[in-house]
Image (cartoon, rainbow, N blue to C red; front, top):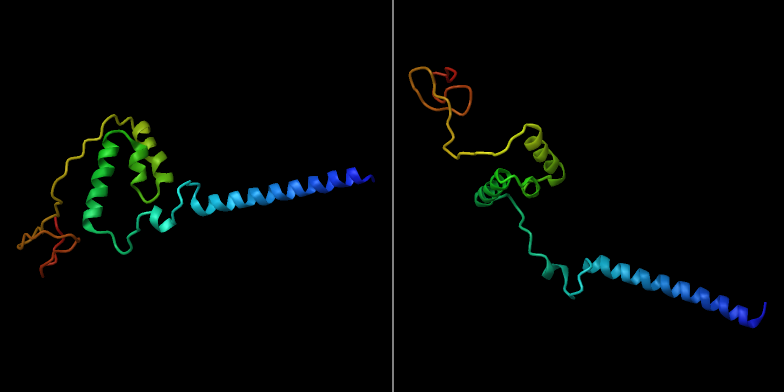
Amino acid sequence: MRSGAKVAVVGGVFAVVAGGVGYGGYNLWNGVTGGDSAVATRSEAVPEKRSGPVTPEETTATAKDFLAAWAAGESDRAAQLTNDPVAAGPALLAYKEGAKVSKAVITPGRRSAPRCRSRCGRRSRTRACPRTCRTPPS
């Protein structure tokens, strides 16, 4: 093999290796930064996640947002407010289209519990009376 051909082969191999290293570095940089061109750490870019149980205020706000989006016919936005948006999106859309629901009207009100049929008349969340009479509620 002539020396010119050897230089061409070695130079080509070097170019391929350098290109692979460059692409690997680029891919690593995008993996670390998430493709964001601004230089920031993840802790600065993403707001701090809460841990622990959900507060009643968060539950109420999420429920109101979900019901408003669903009533407006925005099943994709309503699905994003669930714990499984991938499964909820098609399910909400299928409910609207399959059941031919054109508008959802949801009226908030107080929760009611059945009253005891016997002498006490108290409300109960369970099947049994909350007092000693233990008669099933009506």
